[in-house]
Length: 125
Image (cartoon, rainbow, N blue to C red; front, side, top):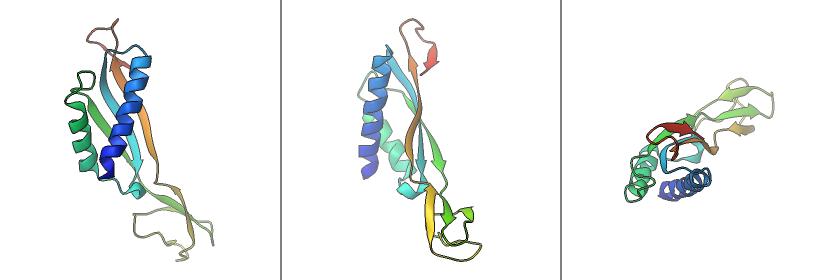
């Protein structure tokens, strides 16, 4: 289950950024990932819950996910098209010679934190 390692890295980076910004609590993490990473959404959510439940700084934080559809360019005719993980041939000329343009990303888009000055108010960082 590589989702556990992914979420561990996401939480490490998010917590460091939050602490560096003077936050007292991590409230939410927004993460984008491509379908071609073969990440399982339920496993990401399970790992997030498991890794945040025992840390007071992370406890209660939410995970917002944005899934990026794969998009490729045909190397024969130049057509750009969206597809699923399994059908990567060009729909225009049926060539199997394609280049993946997006769909393998894994990005922390934003984190939401609480800061001491704001008390229970939340600030986006």
